[in-house]
Length: 336
Figure (cartoon, rainbow, N blue to C red):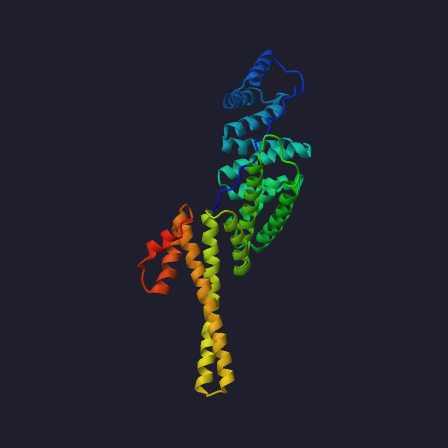
């Protein structure tokens, strides 16, 4: 299940620089028309025509660069990815700053197309030239556990990136806020970054079957943003799985208690086993009821998590109550 994440910052259009004398008046005129065009899509179209008409032009590289920025402005994501690939192969000796700009645009385009593989690929390329790039750290850390939940190595990498990003966010937001940004906007931006990262950690830990730590991460998210349906959904699943683990322990505790009574064990031993059984049963019921609450909240909020949350909720609710009677009212009570 994919989440929606913050978009990347708008990338400044790359500067055009004349790289040599044109070979003909036609080439000069075509280049001038391209250079003077202000509309992003029209500029990209003129650039494409120029490259087709003048395949050996000395303007090729700067035009490719500007076409990429124009397509990014026009939000033509397939073209951004296409030209990023061309630039990657045609400018192998470009400096790190330029490569970072190209890869950042491609990463944003891949994210906008929900292309997980390309998002990770270009995110990794951004981090190769700028290891502390926060948007890339966040995007790669958040995408890996969704795209490859069973890949332990990839999830371990995402775990490290998410923790690095959390430290980076803390460091970034202690500085003075930029001009034109209100205190509320500055606070909200930090909260959203942190929510994304705690969600990523929650999913990584969920994939590791560490449901206690996963629940703790998702509780951090729902405390910050009570209307995050996906976080409530995974929190419900984490509690449900904890309840399932507790139920297995409870079965053993009940068997031990019954066996002691049948064997007429000393009363203190029976009392101790009974107390242990009751404690495990209380823990099981607590986790089950928390799972019901969180899944019902996810259904009440709606969105992409609603159907899966409803399926899980109905199953657990029926197990507890032997029917679905009263379920809709229960869901309405949980609406934030």
